[in-house]
Length: 208
Image (cartoon, rainbow, N blue to C red; front, side):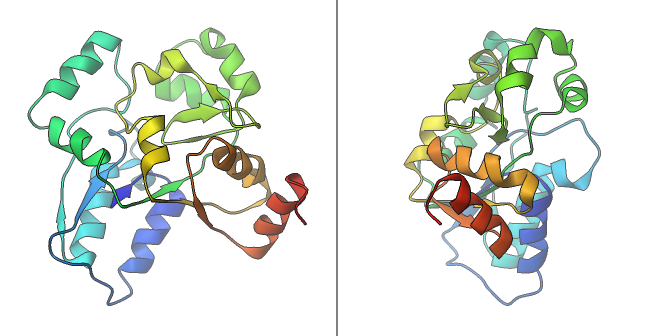
């Protein structure tokens, strides 16, 4: 099982902790993205994975790397590290993943997260409706921020598309465009949400 970060995923893990659900002992939990310098619990990806593994009574593989690095060379070097490589290999074998779906990109968050001038990413801010594990996309599902992806320590877009059950967890009217975009991008195959949000998604896609 792969896990992303965010409020919804943390809430999912907290809900698991109130149940008696557990998995076969051969299963394991892995982070889908590296860590963030932000102190909020919702971004503590290794702790989220550890807590989920504990309640499911399986092992966890932790990812000792930041989500975003300075350049492609450093990214390649980290993926070659013995402590990182097993997690990256596990991404290609996942049976299920649970991840949040972000809101429209906030320039303030972008500056804090990327530690860069937001003007460098003006087109990303303008065109992106959301992200899944920091993979940004437009309303139609088109991939955005390829230069950003080239510095990202996370499961790749193609790896997400190959996961048999990739579950997005999100709710609220501000998430509708992102949910639809994530589905169109092929990054999620299932959705956990509330009725109003689901109806909003159907309206956007002209299914209702």
